[in-house]
Figure 1 (cartoon, rainbow, N blue to C red):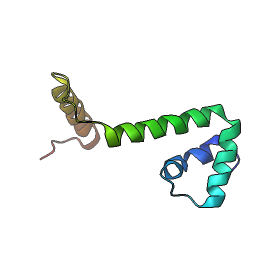
Figure 2: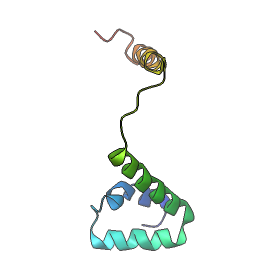
Figure 3: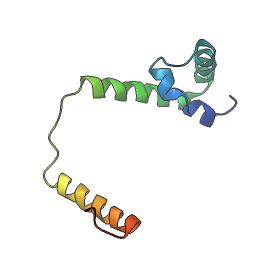
Figure 4: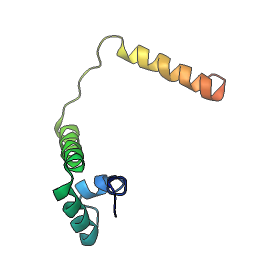
Length: 84
């Protein structure tokens, strides 16, 4: 692996401990010299931890309706018809 993009493809698996030892060592070597990728890994780890430990929060008032309207509009733009 010789650039950040190639490492990014394996970061989720790396954080989950699902890469083999040689890939793990390669990623760790890269992280030692690449602050951007190190920030990405730290952020990914925090996000995973928060998702696992977090509690469900209600959506802000009106957000669900706005999101549904956006999704419906995108659906119609892509498929030119209603969901049903």
